Image (cartoon, rainbow, N blue to C red):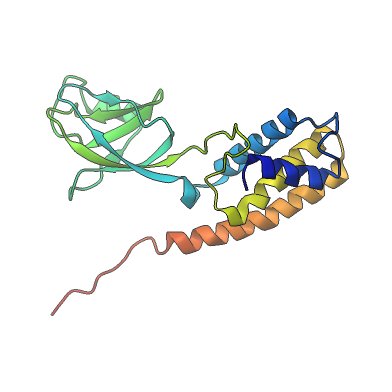
Length: 204
């Protein structure tokens, strides 16, 4: 469903016409986007995964992540081991900021990605990360979430609006309906994720 269709779904659940003065379109648009943010924050959903290339420059130790970046999963250079994630304190205590060489560790700090040692050359890293779900603005805008789960967005948006109207009984029902959808979504995520490690049998 696109934004316009999601608003219609929410109006249906509220039981009011789309001309209702208490629930203008702008209010429902904000509720739908708040619902997207709520769902996005619950788990690392498959539809929010992304991959980009982070290319270093000699002498530069921190980098801006992609515009749609939420958090980094890992950084890896070709067939080398993944860089180790450390805290900013560990980064500062283990490496002098003037030390250069192939990076061994990374840390997110102040919306940037810090590498240590500071790269001494151009290295290309595969950057796997979780992205943010962009806000829906135009009626034709569609969430990244698979269409089969879009009803969950309408249920959470309805929950927000009913709580705002202090219709607690109906709000509880909307939240319970969302919880059922969340269970389906989590089950789908487990199927997508698969086993954490594949063991290969050595050849004779």
